[in-house]
Length: 82
Image 1 (cartoon, rainbow, N blue to C red):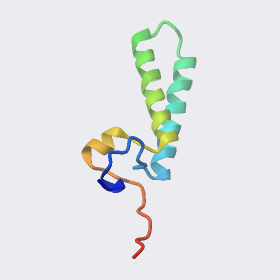
Image 2: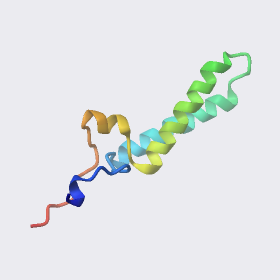
Image 3: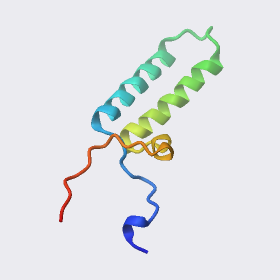
Image 4: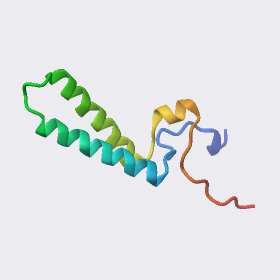
């Protein structure tokens, strides 16, 4: 079995632009969680915080499992070496 056919857990499939967008959205969600008054439904706020955590993980690792399941890859391909 070659190394290329092995299942790798962390495969970078996001471009830097995609990663920056995810990080910005995560920061906005975290700030919203911290600034929204506690009278707002707490469950919705915690769901937003959970989504922010997933987005931060995706931005740091460069890996999105939803992209992987759908076969999407926004990461630029390296030059082919013959």
